[in-house]
Amino acid sequence: MSRRVDSVTLDNLDHLPRHCRGCVFWELAPHIKEQAEEFGQTELEKEAWVSSVLLEWGSCGRIAYSDNVPAGFVLYAPPNAVPRAAAFPTAPVSPDAVMLTSLKVLPEFEGTGLGRMLIQAVAKDLTRRGVRAIEAFGSAQEKDRDSCVIPSGFLVSVGFKTVREHPRWPRLRLELRTGLTWKEDVEAALERLLGEVSITSTASLSESSLR
Image (cartoon, rainbow, N blue to C red):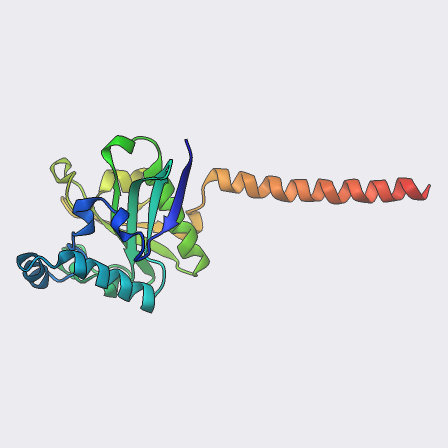
């Protein structure tokens, strides 16, 4: 089984699950969202939002594929690009953080680590861009499992810490300096070690040839 993560673009936006493709819970203020739903324009509004964030800020999402089949996605953006954020009782998102809005893994791929892989992809992207942290509003109630808000239990499981408590909508934060996995740390250490071994071996070979 091959897995990969690609950046969200206008070309692959339709790879999002059907419901999520037309969901504008985060992208529009509540009253504008109702109007868009009434006139059947939610997919156009979603596309306009992604286009605007890509143009003004840069990459704002990742799609995970399993054997070339879309299996999950994540979206993120600066808090000022997420109108719904202001409506949460644990707002505002910290000014040094980017907001994680949506994350969904299709049911048939749950439990395979794709959710964690998506978070790691976001952490890598934002670390390269100098962002200090990721924040998200979590859903603390099991009955909200299928809502547009990421379960807080999942966020905690991938390293987020609660920064503002709430019985239903806590706000959580992931410091990006700790966003890299142990595997990446080990791989980096091995790369350095192998580089040193290669240099040492080359030096030893050169000395032997001079004797």
